[in-house]
Length: 537
Image 1 (spheres, one colour):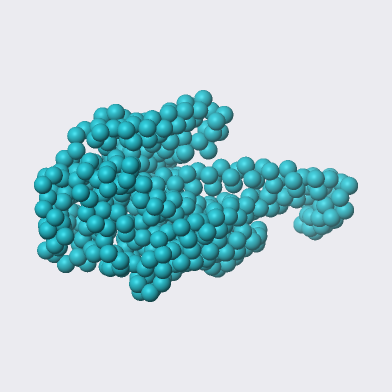
Image 2: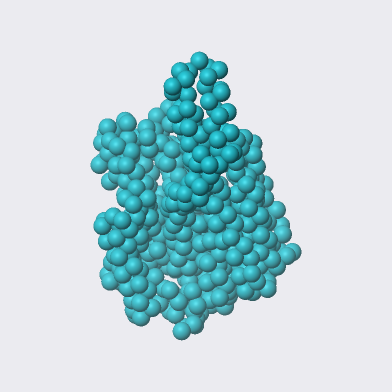
């Protein structure tokens, strides 16, 4: 079945072709892009700003750190489910009405989170915050797709990239600063003025185009239930798996089983249902199918790098949360400088070549990052992250632009929902994979290095003797010197194994980036700014 054949399930009947072709927004398109991106930026920021504040939240609400992590899990579960069905929700309620409702309720839930007096309250409000926040990114993207002609989408997506790429980088830094200097409650309360301004601005500037007005799809209860079970259980398994020993835990095994059954069942149902909650046939378009593959890989790498470098800085080197977050900030500045350049290159160079270059640069950057050492300094870590984000700057705008080039504009809602879902879910997989690999590869590296820590290895004996001499010079008792020296050597040994584990994670990210390089050549050999896809009939 082709995309064109499937289009009627996502289009309103009776929309004149001339209205579809000639419609233009009354407000300035760039003002529209800024205000809808402001709302999305607020939501994306909240996915990472909480991370560094969890110890403070746990202490303030008299709970354990493990229990406090449910603040993240509840948000991600609700967010991941709504991302997929946001196209149907915007059709059912009206896109502008639904978008404004999401902004307002996200702001209200942020206020409630900031005033929470117990952990259960906070978890419930975070769940609701994720539910309403899930509609912001896909609707932002579909509004921009409908507002701008294909020739301008590259520049428009440059604004979108600020929310999608810079917000996860700024989040830990801002969260650490606010928590260290004020209170964790302000990481939620700062959303209130931003949300209210975005709500009023969207109400004044945004309008629904004629091809989505008066368009309602019937409620697909089965598809909705399968998506909720599949993606909800997947997010729980990913977020809680590391703490629960993955498949060693009966709870995680049940979550994985339900996730597999739910996702496979949802795919089968959505491909055969008459009025599915999500139109999967948008993936029959080659550019879009490649685009969601590329953006999924980018999301995996983006979130892996964003979590691994601060974690390394805090756990191995001993940096504070604020200092660890500052390592990411120059990378955000790097992206802001590169993205406008991408907007100018898109009309001049084949989009697929820019994507190829971006993954090649990213692969080289992560290879460079895999050269970590125990005595690495702050500015080396900054340069590693800046090199990684330079590759990201080559990717988001070109991938977003070419993915929708050959899609009918009336499929933008479902396409944007799937596109955002693939990016965010792969990001969650990236975080879980990176965290699990640091633990497992650390154990493997420790096992490999242990063959050298024996009395029969002369360099090991020499190192122990060096520590013994240092301890004697400090006046330690001779009877304790040897055991203390062995203990210190063992600590250095474990530290080295951990550093090698982080290097392995970076090497994996490099391998994934290089794998995407030849796939980029499968995109259409076109430049940004081509003609829009013809309307479906």
